[in-house]
Image (cartoon, rainbow over all chains, first blue to last red; front, side, top):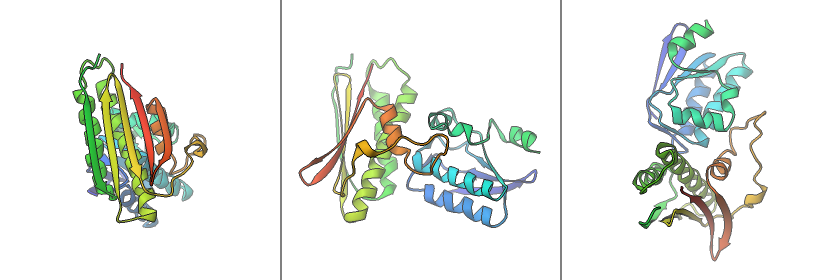
Length: 112
Length: 141
């Protein structure tokens, strides 16, 4: 899976450079986020601008990251969701769980 | 009214790298349907998702018992009815006992069948001969 990590404004911003998150690559995303958290990165924003498709395993990978970050008093938020991807969070009510931001600037403004 | 018939029959190895291919077929079909008056982009996503979830389930079930196996997917569209069948050779499961997700305490798994049930009109899972068939029906328009 193509992932880029950048430290911006004190946040670890994980850019998912894939159009699709499904059962083929969601395990890798989950492991990557867990590894980040274990390394002490507890203020994470996952930037999903490139992602036009996510399935249940992709939602599960992000939820795993959210739960693990929260368990260590950290935060994992989401930014730049395409409309169809956002609708999957709405359908599963996960939009009530995650902090979801329109873009990274909004994420930084609200979190700092 | 859709007058054309679409029939697709695909057999893939039990490997998740083929999910993209199967989902894409659903997306393309949504874009080719004649005279569809609904939200075509949403339908394209939903067919991609349902085919991806159903195929991923079949791969998972087959891989547990017969890793060298394959998964067959058929898609038939005629007279406004889209019929998807996904065949696996795993041990099967009871669809009726799959619970709804707990929205107040969400879990990392168990959302796939919820998506299929929510976005489609009919879902059954039956034993037919030596395989299990997940049959999904969506009525268009």
